[in-house]
Image (tube, rainbow, N blue to C red; front, top):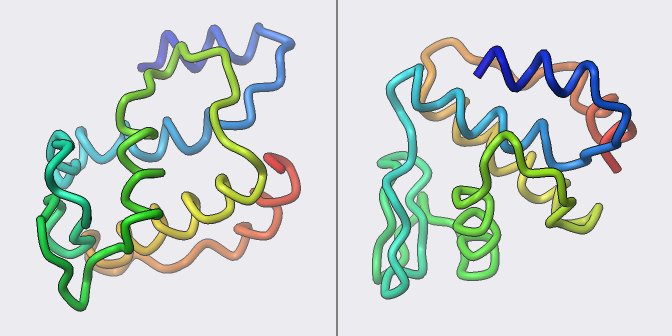
Length: 120
């Protein structure tokens, strides 16, 4: 992963989805990565980190779940912006909520507005 970060630092291309890919990839190392998505399960449970066929109180809606599924398929070396600015805002909100629910003591970053501006 650090190799990819170094490569990005040297690369002059603007990759607006990189921070989302990185944040979701880091969950693997922190031990709460989402399960691999399946086509038949349309609701992602933020608390459990699993995809369900029926929604619960902690599930994303179908549209949000589809965005997350798309993000989970991307790799750090992805050099194509796969999401619109509005979709990136939604995904960042989802990821931050996922971290809050799964990392004890995690607080919403105060720099979130900066992230939104930089990666819009």
